[in-house]
Image (cartoon, rainbow, N blue to C red):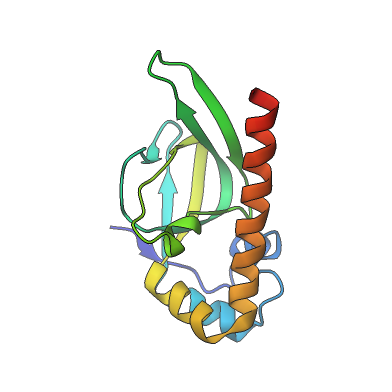
Amino acid sequence: MPEPAADPLTDHRVRAAIAASHLRDLPPDVVTSLLSAARSRSLPAGHTLHRVGEGERHVELVVTGLVRVHVSAPDGRTLTLRYCRRGALMGVLSLYAKSFVMPTTTQVVVNTELIAVSPAVLRALADRDVRVARALLFELSERAAAFSAEIGDSA
């Protein structure tokens, strides 16, 4: 079973990940609330975190390691859309899609530690705190721009 997330005020790796993320401008008390129901996960290289077609809402913050986000063609070819390193937020899209279906596969490239944030807690915080909503908006905007550029480059 995953462990509760380390206190962001005392764990230097978690603090570094938050500082590298779109959550960096949130006050410590808001970050503590955000991580109140979060869980730490240590995943080995090769582990598939999420698969295309899954419908589970999820948000993860990469603390250490590397995660690859990719799509696959029917003939087996793959296209990497994103590499997620320390500070990357994954899954924010799943919070707001009316009926979410995972559009990509996420796979751990090297041993990785991440924080699995409670989607319900994060969504509730965003609903009542514009600073949290703004951090998520910046994350989603950056993802949309990056995916658009990747599609254009691959066309």
